[in-house]
Length: 261
Image (cartoon, rainbow, N blue to C red):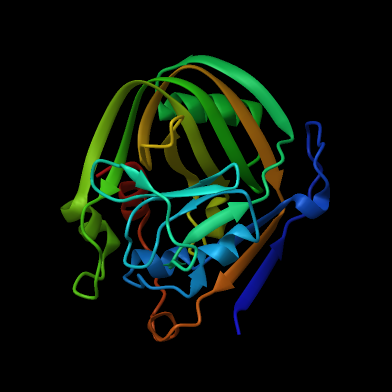
């Protein structure tokens, strides 16, 4: 039987809310703290994930690729270049996060030169670090930098940071249209989930994707959904059950998520 933990955060939002509270739920498979320390196998299938949302990101067992769920369609990278394929719905994942995306707020941005600049802009507009947010950015990117993995992880490397350092290819694309799938989570939510901004990219033609390190926006539409309920489906496989879920230093998280050494 799957184990599900529900965290509900109550708040008064400072901006208009149009989606119903029943839709404002994050569903996550797996635990970030476990994946970062070598638990690379999970029990939740992509089919199960899609029953809980139309928008999300993640990976597959063995850290085989970077997954994007957008507009009900799922894609995963199949090589270091970030070229995509449609995965089997029977694929299982050690970590993925999804929601039924129904934005509260939509606004436009232009000339945002980096991820850091976008975070500054976003923090000014949404001064709330204690709720979850799903963010979609659709637009024209001057540049985008993302990673994709070239080799599946196994039990020989229990440190995800070292595994990524050895097996990633960093791709830099210029003048490309596409979408960013982003989940912003409170710092206190770690080790359950990734704190801060977890970002995946997919091109408009759905042929290129990856885990984002940085980006430069020419012009884009930003759609935001603030979420107060967080459900975690804990794995039930032997590897996870026997795993010692550890907290990881922030420097390790920053490297895995943003490529910062």
